[in-house]
Amino acid sequence: MKNLLNRLISLWHRLSGSLWFVPACFIFAAAGLAVGMVEISTFVDQEVLSHYPRLFGASADSSRSMLSTIAASMITVAGVTFSILVVAVSQATSQYTPRILRNFMRDRRSQFSLGVLVGVFVYCLVVIRTIRGEEDLLFVPSLAVLGAFLLALIAVGFLMYFIHHIASTLDAGHILDGVYDDALRAIDRLFPDAVGDDPDPAVEELMSEQVERLLWQPLQSEKTGYIQSVDESGLLDIAKEHDLILRVDHGVGRFVIEGTPLLSMSRLRTMHEAPTDEPTAETINDLFVIDNYRTVYQDASFGIRQMVDLALKALSPGINDVTTAVTCIDYLTAVMVRLTSRDIPSPYRQADGRLRVIARGPSFDLLLSESLDEIRRVAQSNVRILAGLLTLLERVAQVTTSASRRKCLLAQLELIHATARQGSALRQDKRDLLELCGQARKRITQDADH
Image (cartoon, rainbow, N blue to C red; front, side):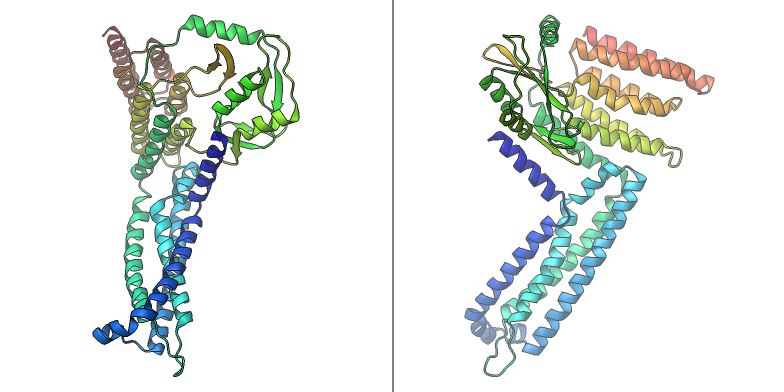
């Protein structure tokens, strides 16, 4: 059941991330509204015409002319709107990173603007089809014609808003804010619990030694692409049902190839290889949602990846926008501060007191490394960027009480210190960086003592 839910969620993300789904919904809604307004007009037109003849008393020819004008205008403006959106997406992906393409495509305000424009076009087509000008069959749905006029005014308002919105979306801060929100939602969804005590290293080591003694049988992937989600509870149920241990070889966000190992199976009690019957293999494969792109839904590291890509693009020689890179580091700091307050569960999943599934999820160390490593290597002697990374470590250290996570922060601090020593910065800049490293080390260790 949960696997079906994951697939429905994946389908929903695919549909909502397209440029056609929301406008298509508006088209059907507009057609239904037009039919409803025409039917209502058949019952109330005579009454409203008698009370408001100047507002509703349009002839068949004038109604057709107005509806034709509105329809032609709306479809023309919709084409221009789509062209503006394509140009904005092209500029943003070339200036920032191609990873933000899907963020533009699933932007609700752009989708709603396109939907309103094409919806008004369809509304006019449906209404104009019902107008009859013959003497014996005269029918003008006055209420529906007035509705077309009001919808046209609403569409003009949406067009003005869309132009403002698409201009603001090209700002780096706006793009980063959207990526940041997606990353926070993923962290809250994947790691809902507040951080607790560090896992017992002895227990983790015992589990690791136990796993190394097992004989593993690989299970091949039936698809090629990125893993978007994994139904871990389904894996746990299968492991219990068949008395297996399942080790996930590729976590969410990783690229797998058809015919290569997706996970490995073994038995704990007999120390023999697990059987790989075809029904079990198909069932397990169905628990993995694999597609041709990554999503943030179960992949918190993808949000971090987008921010890092934005920073790397800003630091490239062709752009050299240090301020945008610093903004990326600020948002990365906020993400890591949220992450360090959350409990990342152990990869070892047990049921009935026995090991059943070895998951492959993100760890604090890996997410911290993904946030800092590439930026640090590219920045090298850039004092402002390296100082921003040191600030990130200090702020994260202020909100964590975990000894293991603080150890990761100190390890990253030493890497920044080594980069500062080996960089090609001026002597004064190098001295300033080394001094900042010393201050950061002092603050991180002081926080540990408190």
